[in-house]
Image (cartoon, rainbow, N blue to C red; front, side):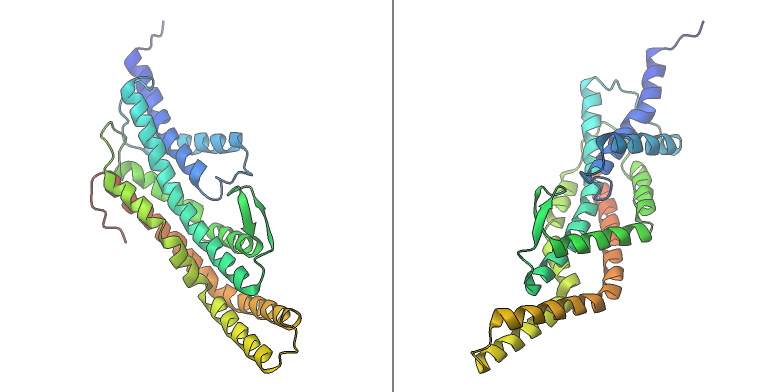
Length: 267
């Protein structure tokens, strides 16, 4: 008769449960798979699949009862770690959408909005356009493989344990949110600069000829300049967004090191 001890049961369960929670946190917060349009069972199933692939190569897990106080603490920590990694990627996506929103406002398309279930708010059409472009760029650069590689490396940089997380990592996560508008402005700056010049030109025209209808003349000009500038800037926008996602992954690894109590020297 085969008998299974409690220690063996905890060892088998811990080998998959703790990695599953960290991976689930990443999947829930990651901008592509974490989209509200993706069904919940699909997210959980993908987290289970990734766990089954990564678990055999991960370091040994603590043999702790998941229902105990220590087990609940470890579970909460793993969710926080996974959400922190996904949050950095979501910040990169938000920066790209912010760039599109700035372009849309300068083009006069601030009124062209619709309800976005991802953010549960009204979102500009140009922001959604640049956001979809960023998602395609993320997939074309094998960003999913880069994220999975960083996720696997996080178990070595920050092993599963009952040790509390260092507060410096949370401070870095909060400070990273302040970079959204700066990066979004840098991405949209060429198109915004062209639109600013066109708006100044329209202002000079209406000043010189007051009989011109600014809405009948200025709006088509800004739309034309905006779409033409966006068409010219798109080939250069791709590498910028790619670099943005790469920096987001590096920042996520730096946060993992800081949560582990190390300064974090990743670029």
